[in-house]
Amino acid sequence: MIIISLNTALDLKIFSPSEPIGIFIIFVGLIFTGMIFYIIYAVSTNKESLEDKKIRTKKEYLQKERIGKLFPKKK
Image (cartoon, rainbow, N blue to C red; front, side, top):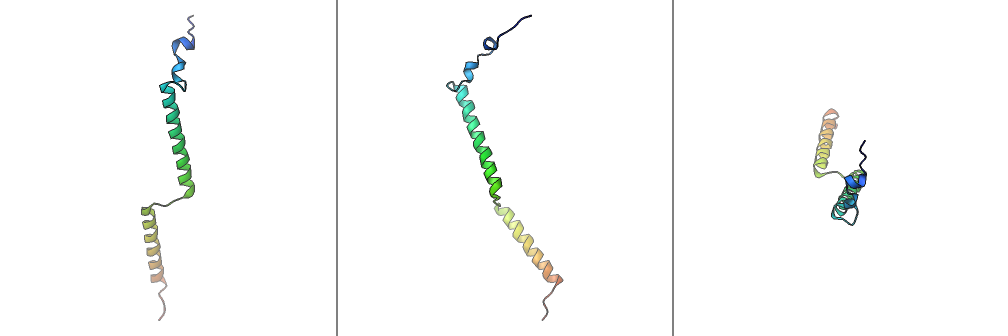
């Protein structure tokens, strides 16, 4: 049976924070974390897009118009 040590098969020092690959991994992790926090913030504030506002106001207008046809004002 051949036993290979992990340190000889793969040099793990290349992933340390002082090496370029380690710095890149930390940088990507920070960007990913920032994106996750931004998504959580955007969902929790529930901001509507301009298109959503237009659709909502159009639906409200149509609803008021239909209600007005069902219950016309008496003169």
